[in-house]
Image (cartoon, rainbow over all chains, first blue to last red; front, side):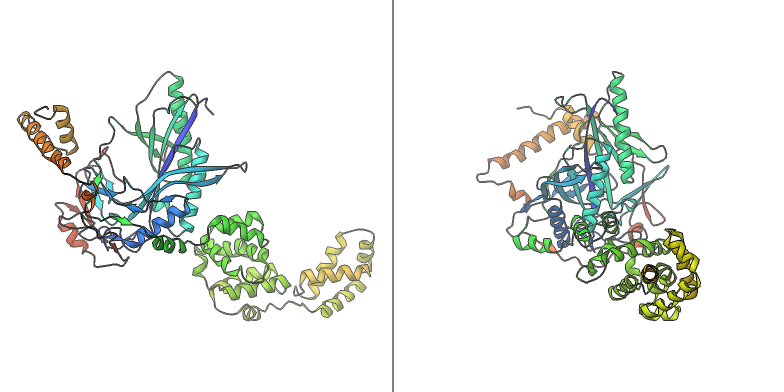
Length: 475
Length: 102
């Protein structure tokens, strides 16, 4: 900790989950052969004109709603002019004057349970640039990314630590991915964060000199980058030194920020309105339609899961996996044991998914088969050991749980009288253990249970057997 | 009013446009650009002029396209149409430390 007050603002770009690009009907895709997803608009050929994708507007309205923003009803686009090979028409189409969303917030919950609102200054729509790969003596360009729709979300300078930045980014990722707005994969570049850091001695002082950190590859690096930058600036001030506004980048290998360039002058992008795109006027109908598409968000999911009897820690874990959480949502109207259901999904089933590197919706598990499974487990017809044995078949075949049990020879004895007869017999044969039990030696019951399982070849429902054994011993 | 643009302003514009100018050109463009700006200024004299006309001079607003994929270019054509290419990439000279967009 330093004796300074840090001030941090965050800018996040996320790529929208549309089928096509923002101003052209070329595919919005990732991981394809370089320059295979383009048309003349994306390449900035002379004479081409942008046509605005309706879905971009709908997803942006949705994002603005989720981020508690006011929505700009009359918007236009602007040209941000600069010369750089990543945008061959020499300007990026963005929204400078009329961002679609403004004055919003998201709420983060800190480790001590305290909540804090992170205020969002504005969020605007813009086009992504092409991807450049710098080699020693040349730069290689791939235009597949050119024209992919983005929203940029800019916070007010209201965060004070790397931890808050981390919580904000996690929350934003959760909201935007559950809102089906973006897949928010930082490692694939569909969510990118830049942070602005400055420090000052007192609340009343003006904000200090700002350093921007770019190219942050993960949320944990964002936290670390902010912490390292606060340290670096504090050391300079402590030594009586100053520094110029600058752009730095986070270097994974050294786990610290390094200087990219000093900002000698302010940017001069000479924004002006984009004359090739008419005004966009958002009607009540459009806004209602966009809001209708918002799926159940994480906070509500967690609340409902806990209401249904899921442990709070497990409710959090369920929400961390979208496909598992969506599957769990399909059960909510059913009568089932949600605690068992959540334990199964997060335990053996998650272990299987991790091992096989699959998502739940890539298995054969259906709601009906899962409910059957939970029911059998709850009744004790199958044990956790059985579950492990059956799991591959449950998740890889379409057979009913009952059929799988038959095939695997899992036949647990759930018939009261059958188990009772076995137990009576065992009690008769082991008078010593019975008297041990009566003298308060709890270990005796384990021995007797072991005998029951041995006699039934492990097929007795353990819970039932335990209950009957206690009953018989006490009678 | 000054008859020419200041040298600093002219050099700033040249810098933004990434062009090098000779002394002779600097002199010439200081005058020419000033004249251009004055001509543009005349727009402000038009009565009832509205800035919005710069954005869209027609009433037909909110022109949106359905999110449906169309025909894309053949990647071979794309790279062959660029002055230089390396494999499937378009090749340009290294430019680092300049402002990048998004």
